[in-house]
Length: 118
Image (tube, rainbow, N blue to C red; front, top):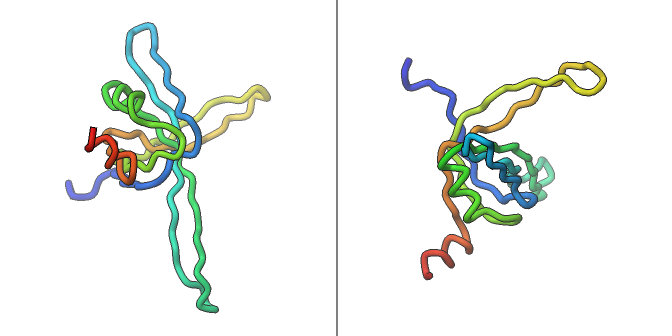
């Protein structure tokens, strides 16, 4: 059963400028969202594009790398795992959310080609 594990792979575009934070300990964090698109034909034969948004968090070395290369619109490949978290909002209601904790990232598309040329 070792082949079955919590693993996510996504390729998409960053939706807005990522948030970067350095903690007092020196540990870095990056937080951003990416959009992935699924294209298919509906029952009428019309092309349909469905967009899904994914919240991504990265820590340590991955966050450091992200800070140097990621920006709004960048096409990126992410590999990581799903994490489920909770917090209590100002009204005292417990809220739950899921995000992808990235352990690898790779530039794809035009920006990756530009960096290879430099």
